[in-house]
Length: 364
Image 1: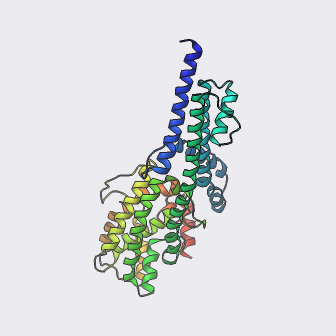
Image 2: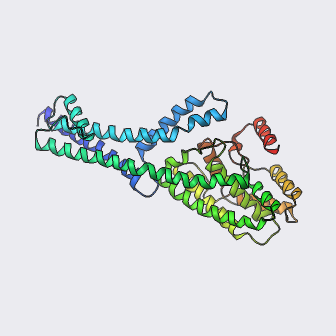
């Protein structure tokens, strides 16, 4: 076998591998109903994230940062689609060159003509015709995947955001878990907190499924800059943890189930992005909330007239035992998604001075 034949075989094998990898990437991303690490997708999203990080580095205003980051996930999906199409074109260019379409420019022209079904470059041999037909078929498949993929993404996004937006009424803006209990008590509907927990049990189950099947959803930002699915989740979990640990009331089973549903959801999403978190933390492990912050919330609930347990020290121990289950995953996801500042979640990364300013603002 001469050198030209060896080069043709090598080019065909490499081209087939590239095309197969691209097809596999699109199937795992769009069709496979489970989360997984797709190298091409990770490369596209990480590279674009680095570019966006450079763009917002000098932006001091959160509104400006949010406006820029709102383009990140949609643009990454379009770039990923372009990468799939380009990968197929490159792979088939190499295979067409291997079966006699010379020079490489002619092979590239035939590959582009086939994948876009333009038909301006006609194949002449059976191998060339076979490759042209398969490339055209895969190009149509990629288009069909896009047509079905985007409506699914935005359907799941709208489902997620419906509850996030409704939570503003119960948890305030920015959302805080204690607000849920205080506002329901003022309305003499404290028992209705169980309805909130039940709604969010379903929400956590939905998010755990959709955000691991379609990881890009985690980076789709809310339509309003001050909202975030991560901080909303944190507020609900804190509200349920405060209810279970502090209120002098019958055992809040729905609240406890909500906490479990929530931390399982956040851990699944965090694991998908390789964010470290302890899968089985001890109740005595440290959390990002200190005793002083808890005492401030306790005082607020007491002043609002909520029925509190007699032992505040034990309530703190119980709250920390609930919080430790979701504490690390919540904070890491808030940092990953550049969530707006909210108490006990995305504010944990602030300096002491900025946190003091933020706390003063939410108390007003």
